Length: 252
Image (tube, rainbow, N blue to C red; front, side):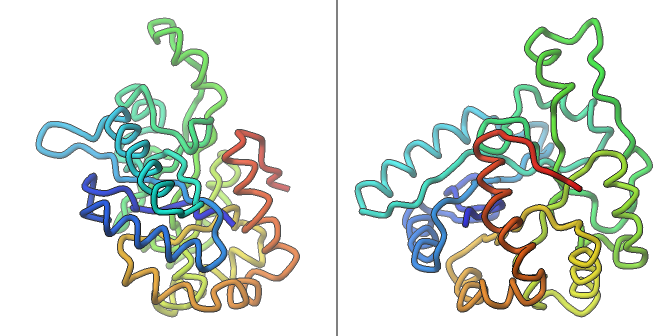
């Protein structure tokens, strides 16, 4: 299992503050059956600036070296969690170069929680003025929506997700929602997503060691019970491997 959404890198956002905290989070993940984690710090406009992919990469390398020195065999992949506060192509152009999941073509984005954006349709056709590296990437980007079950609009109408699927979005849900720790409305969305085959990836969205300790005891058995054993193998094992190897996920 690879944790597909984590704020484990130290000092970059509201997740781990120190590398010591990050190490303890990594140790907890490894002890509970995880072989890898995708570090996805928040990227959004703040005080006139935003976190740069180069800073993520530098912190990741330092953290991975520390894990090796501690004898912790958890593999850490780079990534980020982008706030979708504008149309996807505009966001990509503004934030390029991107911190994609494991450096591939999957991009993790989060929707505004309290409102439903009116700019979710998108075109991946590049513009003539786009730089060559963006023209090469944009048509093949695979947007993944983080924790859609937290959206107030999705809680009101889970059919919104089918519309997003038709537009080409994939979905990563939080383990705490699968375990029923975020309230009955989110749990209801998760059950409907599982029934409709709309859960593609799972992440802890871990921000601290304490948060992970609440989630991880016997997590796999509970997840399989909600998702279904056969689907769980796809969502928890095969799909994460495909993402970090930059291979296509079958959405049928």
